[in-house]
Image (cartoon, helix red, strand yellow):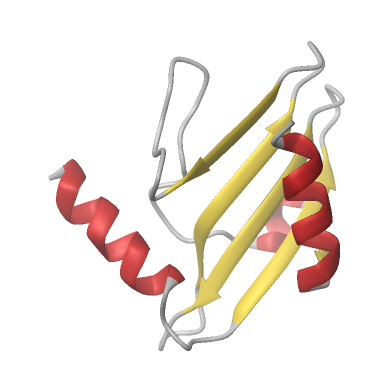
Length: 102
């Protein structure tokens, strides 16, 4: 099942569908980044997700690394308004993703 999910996310990520980028901060001080792909139904499916926790540790998830002991790539669509997320440009997302990869 996990392999099927990985392949589905990879297919979305590599598709020519619109990719949209988001960021937000929650009440606990976590910084969130998401790259989503818009599906036929207008839902935003996460293909990359990063977070910087209050502990200062960065965590990143994608079809390359779906989960670890701290978290996982979302298993359903993301609703940016529900989480108070703000849009980013592709360039802004890429810069932040690279900074968290260090």
